[in-house]
Length: 373
Image (cartoon, rainbow, N blue to C red; front, side):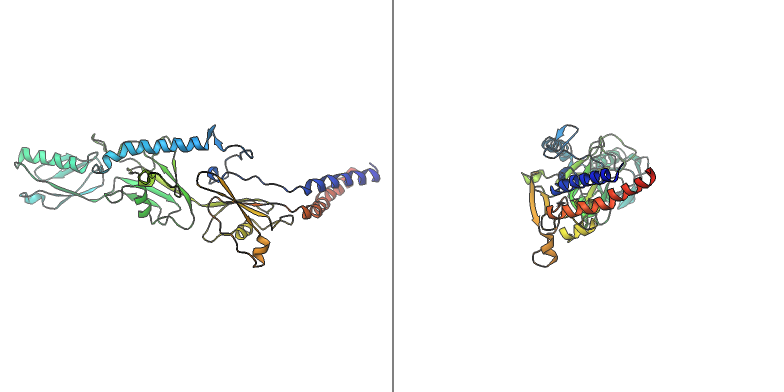
């Protein structure tokens, strides 16, 4: 290959790169509603409806609403009075006129039973408090008293627990009581969401009913999810009517809640594009810094933040980061799910293409020429 041919090919390659660089690169803007918490989902083509396994976003939302309504119907009827007892629960039992059963504390055994004076062993697990009280009355009526009165109170709830993890102040297992019977109650018991929380909660409903009249020797294992598919609860959604908000849905032992960590996304001409955990006060300029800073071709006057509005529509917010740096304009505080898009400046692309060509193509070409001749 002659020197003239090399120069001719080099010039042609540089021209192609310069022309290609003159067009502003338009980064792909993913749908924040369908963004995974880990980089595992494939990107959707631009302009196409977001889908998963052929189910559109609106169809998925409708399917989740159907599941929520089904759980309402299944659990609400028993939520007012049926609190299921299980192994480990500590009971306080009082029977007037029976000295041995005055404020007696009895813990339900691993086998699901309690032992009371004069009555012996009684099955307790799998029953509600009212059902167990009736069973004790029946035994007393058969042995000691006519028309006995029984006072039964659960002092410690151990068997019915819900797993609350993710971006909460105190993650772990939370025991159910009469005062903590809904998803909102459990989140509150876990200390509420922390500063890294996003806007969604993954709810894994346990299989089974709120309380079975049949004896049950073992509690439902925390986190045993029905079909392994969570219900995603949007904390910012306005529910109509408000009483259908799934945060008010009754929970049972074995349910699991995962509060998603809030993330924002940086795409385009930055050193390390990707997803980043959000912190209180994170701004657009801070997001660029977290992504390694803007590259030379970046147009700092044309930064665009894409924000998902209620209903799934996208809102475009223009941010002039260069003016922010100079103190002329106010920076934008990011929200969970925001996508920071960093376009390229047409004026900067031509010199950048030349720089890239000299530092990559010419250097590689020079190395090849030494080995080839």
